[in-house]
Image 1 (cartoon, rainbow, N blue to C red):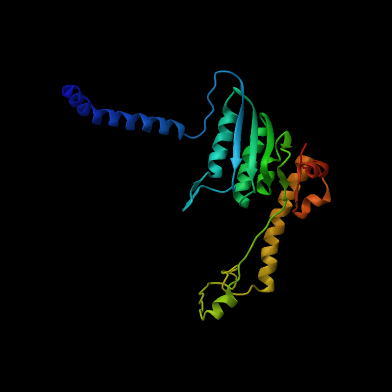
Image 2 (cartoon, rainbow, N blue to C red):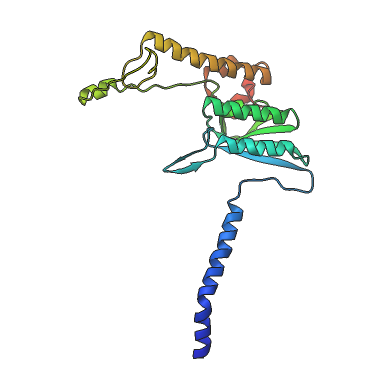
Length: 238
């Protein structure tokens, strides 16, 4: 019996090593990026969640960047066996450029294949814009759709810094180089410039809504979100 125990103890390190290796392989397989592999025609599904932006890391971890969604869309676009694509959204929108890049990717995909967009939770702002090229836009009964518009926020801490006795010196090459600085009040000229930016991007968004959805309610362009029932009445979904 003692001999058997000795053999078991001798093999124990090997067993532990093999277990670790197997677990490593399994984790590696399941952590791979989503891919589409099929030998028969199929409908691809791509889920878009969270803020639409480029890859970034924080104390909360790495978020899925828009580059990954575009990669998956392109993969489905180029796969002859992917006959249709369902885009599942649960996103509040994102940055102007990232949302536009996603919109362009979906637009290219929709020019070649049937695309259906589905609001699982949130399909708001830039997420809704990205869904616009889809042939059909649907929503779950508890989802939130819309929030068509552009927002830009500038924080002003000048008074707070003054109360704390903190003075900020800014050295700049031009009067508008630090436009949007949180350390001072904005001038009327700067406020107009920032509003012009917002209105410019909003007009692009508005044109895309009209181009893809046709006639919609004027309420759509107030920036408000809609319940699925109201969104359908407003012309945002099918």
